[in-house]
Amino acid sequence: MDARQAAVSYILGYSGIHGSLRHLRDRYPDADRRLLHLMQGLDSAAALVRDGRIVAAAAEERFTGEKGTGDFPVQAIEYCLRTAGITAADLDVVAHSFHYTLDPDIAELDEDAAGQFASLYRPERQRELWRTLVGPMPRRDFVAVPHHVAHAHSALDLSGFDSAVVIVSDGMGETESMTVLRADTDGLRPILTVPASHSLGVLYSLVTHHLGFLPAMDEYKVMGLASFGDPDRFGDVFTDLVRLAPEGGYVIPLLTGEVDRRSQDLHEGALARLVDLFGPARQPGEELTQRHKDIAAGLQRRLEDLVLRTAEWARSTTGEARLCLAGGVALNCTANGRIVDSGLYDDVFVQPAAGDDGAALGAALAVSSRDGNPRVRMTMPYWGNAYRDETLREVAASTEGFVVEEFTDDRALAARVAGELADGKILAWFQGGMEFGPRALGNRSILADPRSSETRDLVNLRIKKREDFRPFAPAAKAESAAKFFEIKPGAEDQYAHMVVLTRTRPEHVAGLGAVTHVDGTTRVQTVRREHNVRFWELLDALEERIGVPVVLNTSFNVQGQPIVRTPQEAVATVRDARLDGLVLGRTYLRPVGVEAAR
Ligand SMILES: [Fe+2]
Image 1 (cartoon, rainbow, N blue to C red):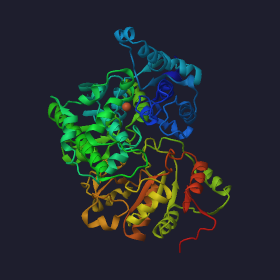
Image 2 (cartoon, rainbow, N blue to C red):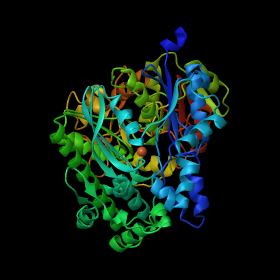
Image 3 (cartoon, rainbow, N blue to C red):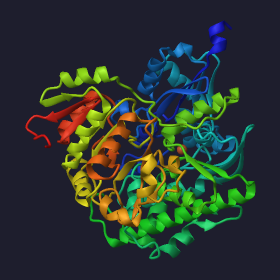
Image 4 (cartoon, rainbow, N blue to C red):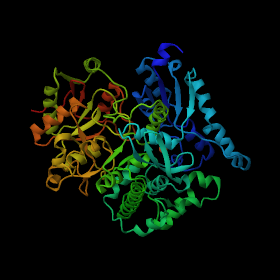
C-alpha cells in the first residue's frame, strides 16, 4: 500500500434496486400502476464519504427527471466522483444499502421467488451492475449493508451523540419494517424488530392508495389532509387494525392475510378489506370528502400513538436520553413533533434524508464508522451539485427574456428580494449546493410572503398546481424563531431541517396565514447565519420590510417534477411556471414585461 492509499479512504454508498419497477410492470401488466409503486428499491441515490466526512450526495431523480426512480444511480455516482476529483478506480469500498439472502426453503418451493431474487436482489447482481454501468471494482471491498443498519447509521453518525436510541421505521427492509437499536461508542445493537409483514409504513401507503394518492410518494399529502379530519370517527377501526404487542411492538393482521404471490406483491386483499372498513376507494382527482379527511386523521393519529409508544418503551428500557429517527416513517414530521413535544428525550435528531435516498449515505457511513471516526452533528445537507456565483452570473447574462440585475453584496440583494416578496411576487431562489433529501432548505426554493393565506392559495394553484389543502412551511431566523413558533429557547436547531412539526404561537397565526396549517401547526425551518448567509440575510431584510423574519419556503419544482438541480433547469421552470422572478446567486432575473416592485 502506498502512502496515498494509507492516508485517504473513499467509501461510496448507493441505494435503489435497479429494474424493480420494470420487473413488477412486466409481471403484472394489468395491475393498477399506483400499486406497483409499493415495491422495494425506489429513491436511488449515491453518497461519497472521505475519511468520515461527506464529500457529495445526490439522488438519481435529480439527474434523470424521474421522481423517486430506483434505477442504478449512474449519474449520481458520476457526480460524486467528479466532485472529489477521482475515478471509480480510486474508491476503497462501495456499499449498497440492501443485503438480501435467499432462504433455501423458499428457493426450493417457489421458482418465482428464486427468479426474482436472482434478477433483482442477490448481492452479486449489484457487482454485475457496477461492472457494467460504472467500471472498475473498488480497491478493498464491495459490501452489502443491511437496509435498516444503513438507515440507522444515516442518522446516528450525523447526530453527534455518543450514545442514543435509534428507531428505524419504513415500508420494509429485507425482512423487517421497524428496528429499534441501542447505540454507544462501540456501535449499534438491535433491541426490537417488527417484521415486514406488520409494516406501519406499508399500512400508511395502502391507506394513501385508498385515498387516491400515489403510495411510497404521497404519504405527506395524507399527513397534511389529516389536519382537516376527525381522528375519532375511525379511531376504533385503526385501533383494531394495528394491535399492540408486548415490548413496544405491534401486529397488523390485515397485512398477513394475502394468500397468493400476486396479493402479496400488490396487497390487493388488504386494499379490498380497506374498502369494507372505510367505504369505496377514492380515485385520483376525485373530490376529497370529509370521510377521506377522517380516514387520514385516524391513520395519522394511530401512527403517532404507535411511534410514541415505541419511543417511550425504548426510553424506559435503555435509559438513553437521546433519540435518532430514520427510515421513511421519520419523514412524518407530525409524528416527530409529537415525540419532541413529549419531552421523553433531551434531544431528538432526524437526518433530513430519512428515506431510501438517505440509506445510500447510511451505507457509506456504516462502513466508515468501522474506522472509529467521531460522530459529529451535521449542519446543512448542501451536498448536491454546487455552482459558484461567477457561473450563475454567466448563466443569467446569457438567458434571454429576462431583465438582469446584478448585486455586489448579499445585503443589497436581500433588500431588493425582500421588497419584491413584500409586493406579492412569487420568486424562485437558486443558490450554492443542492440539498440532499426531499426538503428545500434555502438553496433550491420557491419563496413568497408568509403573511396572507391568499398567498398560500395562489402558490398552490397557480405555481405548484397542487391540491389546495396542502400547507406551506416557513423558514425563519433561528434566533427569533421561538418568538413566533412554539420552540423552546435553545432547541432551535432541532428544527433546522424541516422534519419536525410545531405550532405557530396563537398571537402570530393571523399574521402568518400562508405558513400556518388549518390546525395551527407549522413545519418551520430555523436558519442560522453561519449555515446559509444569503438565506439568513433575506430573512433579516424581510424582518425590516414586513416585520417578521419569516418567508414561505417551498421546494423549487412543479407537480410531478423533482427539485431542480442546474441553473438551466431553474430558468426553464421559472418560464414554465410563470414565476415572477428568479434569484440566481447574486443576480435577480425578472421576466421581460413583469413590472418591478416600487
Ligand atoms: Fe427504507
